[in-house]
Length: 361
Image (tube, rainbow, N blue to C red; front, side, top):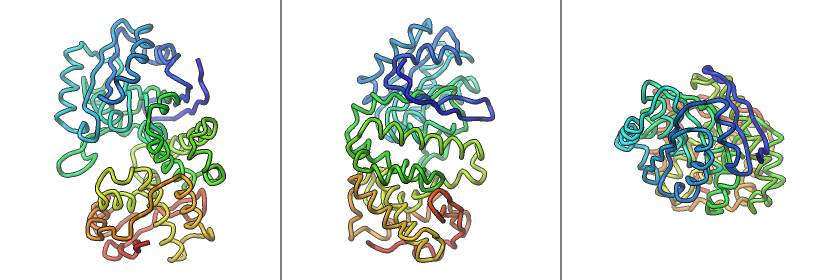
């Protein structure tokens, strides 16, 4: 079957497996054991569908009597109420029922959209994640958060709806631009910093292999990162407290994305540099017990090939994005701070002073 690794995740609705496999072969038999039904639906996008939908459909048709394919536009714009409504229309027209699973084949956008469609149609049907990017494998496919964007902001509409299975096929990474694969490693770097010193050591020591997309190094790093996410989610499934440490690097990372213009710096690259900026500030404030941590993070980002932060970054755009961060509650920003590698705490910062976090490199 080509299974490389397996991580078990506990959820309030039942435990599920995250399977790392070489390819899609075997997913049909695996999913039929946890979600038996007479039909299924695959939601994918216009980029991923032509590459991988045929292989997934062939697997699923062996165990489901009928498999419907729903293709949505590629890109962040698909996470909208309008596209979600169209997916619901097609599910209902295709005869969806309470036991019929919905598969999300693609990156984080498809996973969020298809997951929310599965959570909302008929008040909830089974959901299976088939992530095709590093970012989706280590982050958005695990934990049960689904959602859409709204004109008022990102991810403001959604639901917690845990998958029944996550099948991460490493072969799907072969059709991604190498930069996109390397960018996803920003989330792997984050996982090591906040909760797994061994993973951080692996990323630091083998950053050259990871940058070169060495298969064994990627599988090892991705598996360990998924295990970190699984443990944090188990401790705080509904994001009531500790789960906020998963946002390390994201406050300033989102600021970089916004100031540079979305797309100029990939999300994972921005998270990597956000981790560096936050660690540099923590060192200056005496909050970090690890000597030279910011410099070590910087070296990893460089080794992974992340583009440098330009010195002429628009400060106004940067700080506007930071002020809208979801960790801002009233007048306080709850910032994840890495005290030492593998140990992260939430630190309260008055919003009026958060510009001390940022210095143009």
